[in-house]
Image (cartoon, rainbow, N blue to C red; front, side):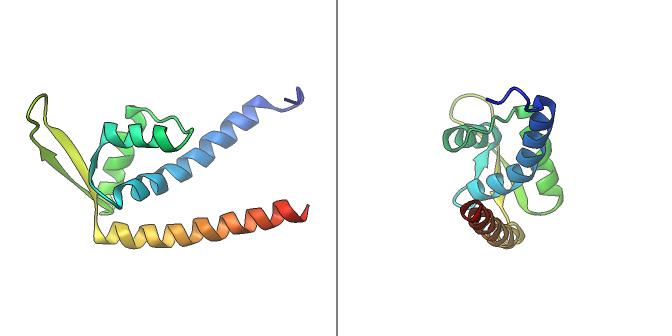
Length: 117
């Protein structure tokens, strides 16, 4: 790696990029079925290199719930403690479709730029 790269800049840039993607990824993961918080973290780790902590995901899920994009419901488990499952709402699904169109268009634009330079 180039020694002249400003690691502070890169770290800050990655953090900002990640913040924007997390909401989108959470909604994508919830589109097929309800999940509890730790399950979302595990799935994110399975599909991405983004690391997310419980201290990050739960405030984000609460904000998505406030914005009526997800709902939550406690479920009793056969063993262990109850889990709070999050589910995408109709409004959340509509938002996800708009976000997906934007991300797809943005990815296409970035690919075009990369190919042209």
